[in-house]
Amino acid sequence: MATDTEQPKWKKYFLKTFWFLVSEWFVIGMGVFIALAYKFPSVAKNHGHIRADITIEYLAVAAIFLISGLNIPRKKLITQASHWQAHIVTQVISFLITPSIAFGFASAIRVSNNPNINEWILIGMIITGCTPTTVSSNVVMTREAKGNESLSLIEVSVGNVLGAFITPALVQMYLGAHTGFYYGNPTNDMSLRSLYAHVMKQLGLSLFVPLFVGQVIQYFFPDKTKWVLTKFKLAKFGSFCLLLLIWSSFSNSFAAGSFETVSHQSVIMICFYNVASYLFFTVICFMCAHCPVLPAKFKFSRPDTVAIMLCGAAKTVALGVPLINAQYAGNATEIGLVSIPLVLYQGEQILVAQLLVPIFRRWILKEVKAKEEQAKLDLENADKSEPLGEVQSSAEAVDVTTAGSEDEKQQLSSSSSMSSESKQKAIVEEESKK
Image 1 (cartoon, rainbow, N blue to C red):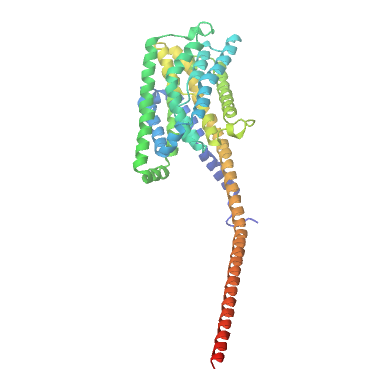
Image 2: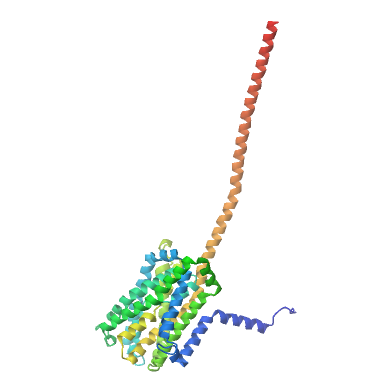
């Protein structure tokens, strides 16, 4: 029989469903913002109602890296900057492995001569593979997964600075005359110079400056900074800024009519390809960073591995979209078509990463828990060995005191014997005198 305090079943299910939806607020919010972008594309597009090219592209991204600057200790950031092994693994995957895989898939699709697949979609696939890691989402995801956030931040900085020079060169190479994709290679030196200027401006204002400001504030006001981060839950605010980026990206695509100019087969193919390629890139990152068959000394730690997986597999619209706009300036149709794979990859990688974050977090915390249990066992063993040591030391002390007492007894007996002999001599001398 149910007690009066027991809740009804419907209420239990309702609360369970409610808290599940709350825990998945980011995924739900992403769907809501994509729906808003589809219904009202002029609101969050560049130069739209809210001037997303300033409020989101710069201010929202700057807020994400300001929070990172407030949260990451300065010494840890400097230490991770010298972690050259992780830099090599992440950047090699980002600029060598993923572009070649994307080019291989695009070539295979082109050779199949499927009339339902738009040829400019393949150009977008190649450009997406050549872009560096995303500017903000992997930092947020690494923080939520309990990974090495400072290492992720360094990889973002290194990757995007290198990408400003490497990505245009990779695009020119894969769209060369002998690759079969030369139709999508609009070589324009002025566009490349404007691209470099735009990328450096964006990285400076939205990444390096807010990161530096956050570090300065943390250095002078450490206690207040920690209180503000905890009190106002700024980590959640960083995730919300990430949703604004998704909103802006899809608003630009819907405003340009990009999804209306391609077949449904092309969009479905790109959606499945993006998810499969992101998961495949993540597996490659894991095998390079924490391969089970390698000795332990050649493996990265689990927090470092999570940072490498989230950075190595991600691609950014912050560099890809300016590159597309710069190289295909004046041709809105081609810009819209080439942007589709990159914009979809941006949303899908965040969605898949959000689903992988709980798995990564459990994987890291499992190791932390095992280390804590081992430390507890070591402490208990040390506590058990201490009484034996005390007994041995006390026994030695007893032996020493016993030995000392025996020596004292011998001295006392010798002194007493000497005193008795002297007394006898005195008695003999007195009798002789008498």
